[in-house]
Amino acid sequence: MTERPLRRVRRDAAHSPFIVIWEATRACPLACLHCRAEAVPDRHPEELSTDEAAELMRQVAGFGRPAPLFVITGGDPFERPDLFELIRQARELGLSPAVSPSGTPALTPGSLARLREAGAAAISLSLDGATAAGHDAFRGYDGVFARTMAAWQAAREAGLKVQINTTVTRRNLTRLPDIARLVRDQGAQLWSVFFLVPTGRGRALSALSPEEAEDVLHFLYDLGTTIPVKATEAHHFRRVAIQRLILAERGADHAETLGPLYQDLHRQAQRAGLIGQSRVRRPPIDVSAGRGFVFVSHTGTVHPSGFLPLGAGNVRDQPLTDIYRSAPLFVALRDPDRLGGRCGACEFRTVCGGSRSRAYACTGDVLAEEPWCGYEPGSFPYQRDLARHLHVS
Image 1: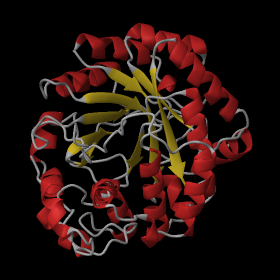
Image 2: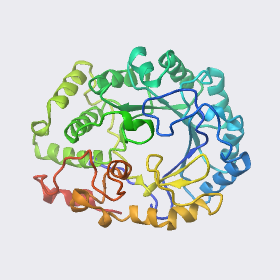
Image 3: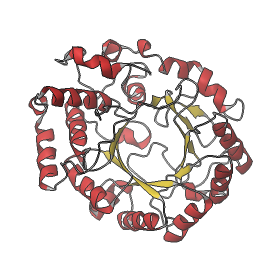
Image 4: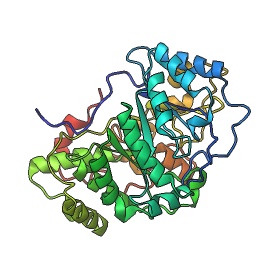
């Protein structure tokens, strides 16, 4: 079988999202350095009520079959006492809910077993360091690393699929192979490597350069036949996947244009046995903010992404289906010909388009070029080979 560089969703992205993420609350006792939600200790009085949350889930189911993936995030979803009830209702509506809890004292084997019993299919856990010192410093409290590792094991024993989320920062940039080794050894459905968007508390963290981001993306591609990996808010990973496949077909060297960070990460990965052919590569999925992806805040405001603080309506006033399909912001984000700068001129714009969240955070223009991508449009040497991969179905 011919290798596919991308995985495309089997639905019309203008009609139905691939994934809906609901921020159930912003309450969380942690103080993570990158927190998008700028989480606070107490729940907001205007959070969606239990009945309103149930109505939201009916609207998600209203997109039709196959139902979008439905993720309950926060803050910490365990701060909502109705969490298990809502998961049961989601199941009754035909959804397959996943939960993204924080590494708080509420994350116990008992609570994870209750999630599974209520009908949750999967959880995601954050791991931003391969040691307690590295991870706990990032999360703002001691003991979070140990709690996360214990929850990882307990979730698997409860029958929950586990996704591991890692935020790339200068604190852990050169230690990514150590985290990857943990993911391989402990086992996970997916390793999601998040490229920081400077919003919320993340505004205080230093950015990667476009060259460093490129080096990390190629490193992640190297790992793809050993562990299941994806890049979040790094849509140019799709460009890298297409380029690497074509370069491999041509017998060309990908590494000659990459920097010292890539060489270091690649060497570490080789020493750890992280580069090999033990599994089929998981192609990156062709989903972006507003195009297959929608986020609903704790108060019901609808955004193209949780990292893009532009509202397009509120589910208390208008059905989510209508907002997703018709809101001008969502319609604009689904049109690659409206992109500006290098993104607008790029031959990969129909499958990449850059992070609209990062473009907005850095420039104030949601359609501006991707700040963390250094690719010059038209510079890939095998332009004729691109046609079969850039078709938009």
